[in-house]
Each structure stands twice: as C-alpha cells, then as structure tokens.
Length: 337
Image (cartoon, one colour):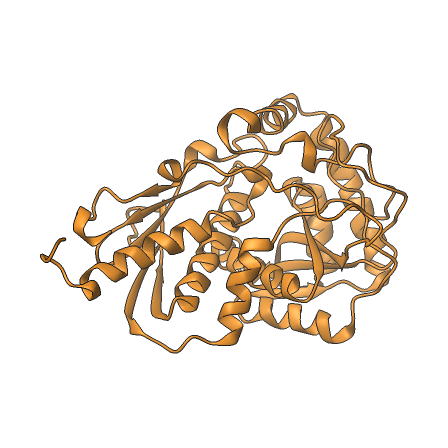
C-alpha cells in the first residue's frame, strides 16, 4: 500500500481522468472524436487532434471546434457531478492555438440533482437520424432546451415559415458536396473506417434509405442498415446555433452550447440531430445567415423532435476510440492515479 501521497493529492488527477473519459462520449462530426485530453496532477488540458479533422469538408475547423466544445462541456458536467468546483480557461496560450482549454479544480462543491441528471444523459445520449414521431415537443421542454443552450451560447428557434428555406438550403448544400470528389472520398473513409478504428459511422447508424422530410438529412453516399420507416418531420422543430463572431473561440463556445442543449433534451426525451452539411457550403451558410436576420453567424442547424415509439428502440451507439488514443496520463505520477 502506497503512503507517499494522500487521497486528496490523488483525487484531482483521478477526477480529471474520469472527466476526460466521460467527455469521450460527446458527439462529434462524423464521430471523428477530434480531441486529445492531457491529464496533469493539477490540471486537465483539451487539445485539438488535427489528424482527425475533416480537411475537405471542414477546412476552417468549425466542426472540429464545435465537437471539442461539446467534449469540454461534457467534462465540466462530469466534474460537477463528481463534486468538484472547476474553472475553465479557453485558449490559455496565444502561441498554441491547438490548446483549446485548461480545467483546474478549486476543491469540493455540493452535487446538484441537475448535474447528476446531465451526467446520466452523457451515458445515454445518442444520434437518431430516423424521422421523428407525430408528437410535438411540449413548449416547456422546448424552452428548457433553448435556455440550456443560451446559458452557454445562442440558439435561435426557426419559425415554420423558415423551415422550408432551411430545407432548400440543405438540399443545395448536399448537391454541391455530392459533386466534390474530395469530400466524397472523405465521407467514404469516415463511413467505412469505424469497424477498424473505433471512430467514424458504421452502417448500423446510417438510414437504409433517404428520409422523406422537409429538411433532407445528409446523404452519406451509400445506404446504411438502420430501418427508417415512413415517418416525416412535420412535428420537428429546427434551430440554429449562432454567435457574434465566426472564429475558433466562438465555435468552441457554441460546441459547449450544443452539449448543454443536447444533454438537457436527452433528460426530457427529446431527440437531437445536428445538420452540419448546410453550414459547410458558402451559399447555404449565407442562407442561414439571412434567416438569423442579423442576430449573428450560424454555426450549426439542429433538428429537435420526439423519437418515434414505433421504431425498434434507439439505434446502436457509435464506436469510440481506445482511451489511450484520446487521453494522455503520462504526466501524472502512478501513485496519483
């Protein structure tokens, strides 16, 4: 039995490792998991994993930052649910743009029921690309999701009149990307690589045929094996994540807002599907910018709805990379883990 370090000495590093593990369940573009967590005895660093950036579909890194922001919020929730008071410094070093955030803890704090609910939502959250049911989201639920997002960033709920414009923009973006051989090759890689690497999108989470919806879902270039059924998106609500600026810090915070909204939605039975294709093409991005009517810059479109109870339960979970690929604990002495 080791006596060199007390339990208090060891707990922060253990808590950081547990938080990084929970963060690995965060949503990411094409399930690329473009993050690396570096655990230190006194802090937890979030680093962009550029090797998993979509160089063709996301050359600016907007979707990478959104993904990493979602992971950052997951880590914050995990620490809160473990009873730690944490402080986040985003982009702590101007000369290292890939060091996205550093978390430190300042001691214990009471665990709230909200933190426990959100931590549980981390474990059960998933992406269901099938059409939603005919049940409308209760207004109180929609307000809760919007409030959670706005506590971290900004979310604009689209009116029914704007949904058709979003659908047209999504269709145009899909046509542009379908004609780009580099994007097509990248898509093929991330929808065929999952079985070997623990990343990407396996056939089991991709619809077996395109959904018949007002706002078309992404065309993954080939059918999956997920049964779709005959539903539509008539009761779905569409929203835009947005912000004042359009740079890495804005995108990272928007990813935190995405996580907050999605976890809250999960706690009340609301399904969330991110629609990233419509922001990847300049012409469709400008359509979203006009839909925001000067509120800010669009980062991501979202579909919200109640999952169809007639479907056969939730779809399979996407795979995850090995812990050693996304968490580095080499800076922590072994007696602190």
